[in-house]
Length: 202
Image (cartoon, rainbow, N blue to C red; front, side):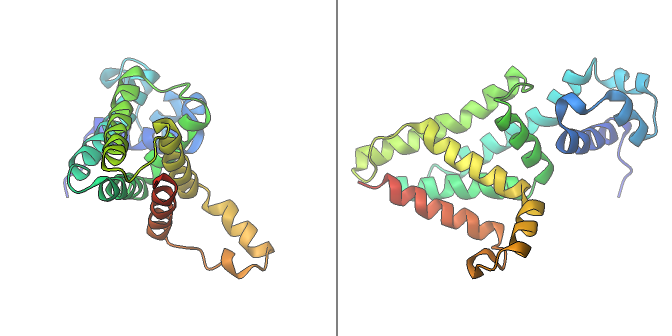
């Protein structure tokens, strides 16, 4: 396997830091240190921290939008929204650092999210709106607010994907059998899909 370029190394380590510490608490100095390079070496590739952050997360938002658009064009509205939730969830579970960054941005109201990333994220909502409208035309979905459904999906999946440590601590304290064993993330995706579709149906 080829050794990653310096730029690739910076992006990888920066992604880890943004996921763990958040945008505000990540410094270019700390990224340079873990990369074993100088801070000016980062400036050679990125003009500032925001530019680096944008380079880390905007391709992820673009990728998730593309995956959703590709996977949610076939079938009726029920099949399409199942694909929407499954695609969203699968992307997050295979990209845990992005999931952590996304969760932080959701909690802060997108305080640090570049406009270019918001534009890519909006593509997922546009696709969801298309699915919900198709369900209304088919007579299978009641009219609902797309942002509500989007928040149910995004908040549930990002929160579940980033809160394993506290859930493990809680499970050690309580005795309820339903709390353990810990369900697989894909089971959570399917359960969420079932509940949302049940709530949407006329």
